[in-house]
Image (cartoon, rainbow, N blue to C red):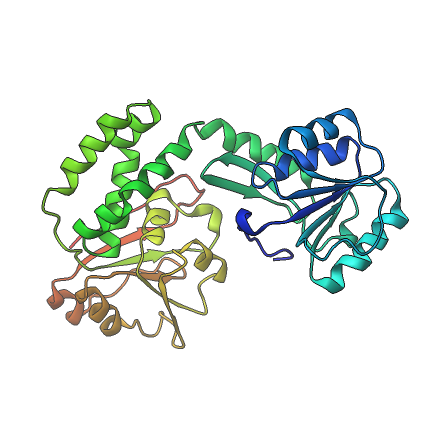
Length: 332
């Protein structure tokens, strides 16, 4: 990655915007979604900037850029139309380890602002690393069309009941499954429809029910040529719920990015075409873990006596030929 994605704590943000035109207006409006700890440095400002200064009681240094005012800030945006001034801002800020953004001059930036979809408290940030703003705009439009405005209420709801669910639903995978079923089902729909009280009553009733501890299983995924575009929906969901994943050097490493980030990774030095590490996978499954075994190609697996006698549930998925979602599933 050319840029490291990160979200900054708004409570610890102290920003300065240098410039007073329409570009500065847009930058101030964006910052105001998170903080009012904003200083504007410009001798003159346009009407929209002045309105924001007065409305939110922002600090206004009524002079153009001067060095020596960065001691109390940790983020600066240069929004002037003078390239020499912008460069001077960058040269002052970077030795002080201040996050610096010079509008339309990426070579003078230590960070760039992504495209943002705001469903607070849920935030989606998109970036092409500065290579194609138009492509990001198109992607943002697609996501916004499929993401209800009330989606943030689902996040608030989850936070409100997180500790209650954690106390009642044992096992990390069980909780993941519980929350997915809850947010995708009638309770989640009730939240989106504005029926908060109904949703809360339904959730309380559901966590009072006895929930069994997680059962371990082993899922084999045949990735064929390893093209990520051919991951089926079933395989993708399995990868997101895995507790552990086994794979060898023949597996496309890009596929590991689709596995749940905190799943334990077990790269194998011996190729699966020679030997599959059944014993280790069985041990983890017996501990209640969902074990994923990624396989290159599409060769049928030979029967294994240890696996057959273990009583562990197994499944097998195969990537679709054209990314059409087709898959084969075997359960034992």
